[in-house]
Length: 457
Image (tube, rainbow, N blue to C red):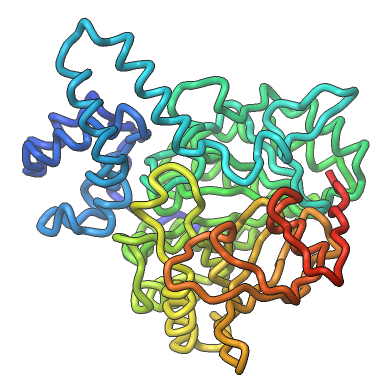
């Protein structure tokens, strides 16, 4: 570790604030009774968690409830249907309705598509006919690993597509008790070159716990890249600067790099304000000093970053910090999707307008991209020709590697916000059609024959 930590006076220990601390937060920051009630209601269904850094450094309290960072971490009216909100309100008033309230909460969560894109059904690998807990293997080269101790975050994003990890329901949660089954699986699958340690957020773990999950990977020759998916630089940069084991975690990163592995820190930055503080930029500099590479990604979300200026500023800030702009995702069809969704037509315009403002080195970013059942579907643009208007689409990654990189198109729609709302053109080849729509919806042009995509997992 070649970069010394500067003398930051903020050496506070991390402490999470949740629904039980809401009244205290409301008193400190002047949250109105109406907003407080909304947060109390919605947080019974969707997870709510913040910390002192987010509260004091990132939220503009003079602009609530419209402030982007407030929208990003505090549940809002409209994230649930008005009927569900009313039902929760009625049941919450009477202690005698506690059992019925719990059943209602479970029913609402089940309607929110807690595991989109076939995560449970299609992504979980097996050994000896038994599914392996805490693993996903969707793409041939990459395995996702969910260490059990890392299945929380320093703060929760209201848009999070993995919200089901944080609601206390074991049936909805991905969590591995330890790395043993992962290591055994990797030894049997040498085609896997990348392991993404994810959650939740692995960086909520102490260095010693994190070491227990990373060190075994160093002995697997076929694993060339270890990725860590984290929001910690945005929500608790102290993890790399002033926490008691901040230096220890950076030495662990150095150890991974010294072992000949590429260490990729997948930083989740949703708004440029998350990179506006000195301590956040220092955290990135310290991470990079270990030899790790930082890639940045986030979804395009209404009420938070649905403007070209926000994305241009964000990508420029990432580049200035030495990080690589990587993905602009489309908000997934889960949780409060309708509150945050941005139509694909608007998403294309935002991406293109922001992209045109960037210097060449920041044009590494790809988007808008839907991480859907068949793979990562990029919307490359909108085409107009004598036959009409079309979305130009391409699979950047796919369950079936033979589909990667192949362009196809769908009829233009002003309102569609996800791939299953699109009507594919008749020119789309049968294998792509089946992968995107599934066998049940893949109506095939009469001259074509549908060929199911092979299972690569």
